[in-house]
Length: 109
Image (cartoon, rainbow, N blue to C red; front, top):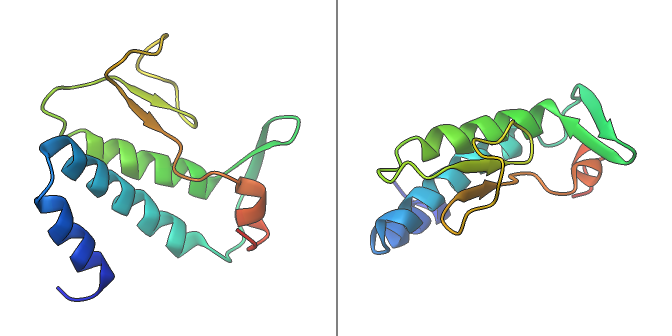
């Protein structure tokens, strides 16, 4: 494999297991976001000025799926899905793969 993605993966392999897992989750979500950029998407409102698109949800699932390999089985707090936990713990995964949904939907972010 060549290119920037290969360099990121190669670098991640030199890091700790948790960082490697975070990198895999980031790359998985990023791939979904990149593929959806500039496309027309179904959009829902979570509240005033708080939009969510199918890309938000798919990227969230991609990151969450990648974190399923976590040997510590840490809880996951996700912006788009129901959290595994009702509270914030010191050791947990926090996912918000697509910040600034409005700019993304306008192909400006």
